[in-house]
Each structure stands twice: as structure tokens, then as C-alpha cells.
Image 1 (spheres, rainbow, N blue to C red):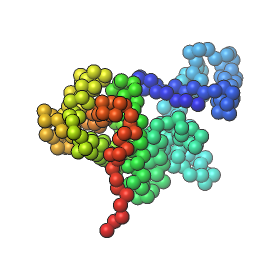
Image 2: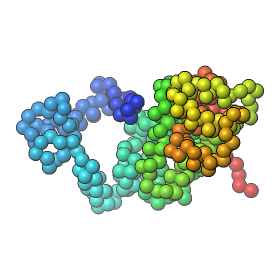
Image 3: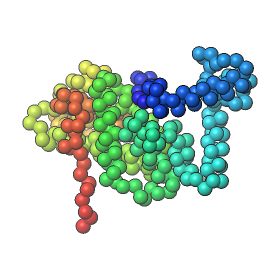
Image 4: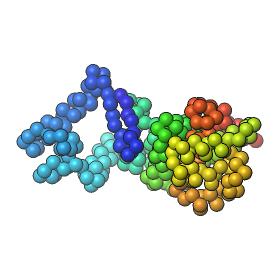
Length: 282
């Protein structure tokens, strides 16, 4: 099974009809079609919803209220059965459910967002392993940067902000934002420290040519991290004030430009600059 996300943010699933997963999905859809025929007395048409509001007289897509009611019902059933409710709460929070069977369909960032949500709803925020969080954040960022380079679009970078906006726990959001920022800035400053040629100029040129002028202008505000003598000398707080929601995307675009021009688009090149926090406390 493969999951792809288009430039409009819509996810598409494709699977082998003869595989085990394909058989299960086909049976699930057949069950929904049977429920449609039983309720409405006809075959579903191409514009009819597969999952429909159960109380509507006409085929109507499930509303947020229907979804919330279904989740509430599952939570009550889980409570009655003594089953862990955290995965269900996490599903409601992030909008998807990650299991061992389907986790390969999601990016590392999405898997980590779901795992963090489960941890929060279990009340185990103190048990989060910072080293693992940094490692997963770096892997997820590499996925986003690779997608940015291969697609030649700015949209993948905006998904980080959207994921943070959907999180309920301010402490967890702060930890995630800080970790992502630290990883991105470490990549940039570490690359600058080992460079013998200009990094910022080619990176910004790639952004302007492949993404657009606006992302290039926003990335330029942070280009001092790559040693640009022309970029403004901003503190992190000043950059946040100036860029707002574009702060993290601008860091991603700058790293994407760096990888595209210095490493021929190979995001694994960044691993040499990964933050190293695996040290013993004194």
C-alpha cells in the first residue's frame, strides 16, 4: 500500500487488490456499500459518500459531530472494557490512527506526532526520551526536505505548523517547536563551520528558482546562519517576530536549498551534522 499527498494536501491511498491489505480494504468498502444499499435502497453513485451520516435521510458525508459521537462511543466502550483510551484520544487530536500495520503509510513527522499525542494522553510526558525525540525529528525533517526538493514546492514545509496547531498540549508544542528549530539551525551552522565556499548564495538562488520569490525572501532573513554577509543579523526572537508562521518553513527551505546545491539533493548528507545529545550527565 502507498500513501501520497498532493500539492493541495489531499492524501491518496493506492494498494494491490490481491494483497492481504487490499483484500481487507475491499471487504471494508463492500460492507459500507451494503450499508448504503440497506439505508437508501439503491446503489451508491460516484458522488455519494462512502461513509455517510447515519441519521440523514439523503446520502450526506459524516459531519464533525458524527465523528465526535463515534469517537465518544469508542472511548466509552474502551473504558468499559478496561482498554487504553490514549490511542483514541490521539486519533481525535491529530486526525489519523497509526498502527504497526499502517505506520509505513505516514511520514516520520506524522508518526512522531501521533506517538507524542498518545504519550500526552497517557500522562507520561515526563517519560519522553529527548534523544529519541531529536532523532525522530531529524528523520522527519529529512523527509520534508526531500519532498520539498523533489516536488519543487513550498507547501510541504507548511505542514509542520499545521501539525503544531492541532496539538492540544502547549508544553508538548513548545518542546516540538524547540526541537525542530534546534535540529534545523544545527544543520545550517554546522554546514557553515565546515564550508570553504559560499553556501548561502547558491541555496537562496535554488529557493528562488524552484520555490518562488517569497520563500526566498523569507529564507534570506535567516541566511546569516549560513554565513551570508548580506542577511540581517537577527536573534531567534527577532526572526520569529519578523517571519511569524513562516519561521520554521523558512528554515526548512534554507536547508532544502543547501542540500540541493551542496549535496545534489541527498538528504542523508545532513546526518553528519545531526545534533549529538547522547552524553552522560556529570
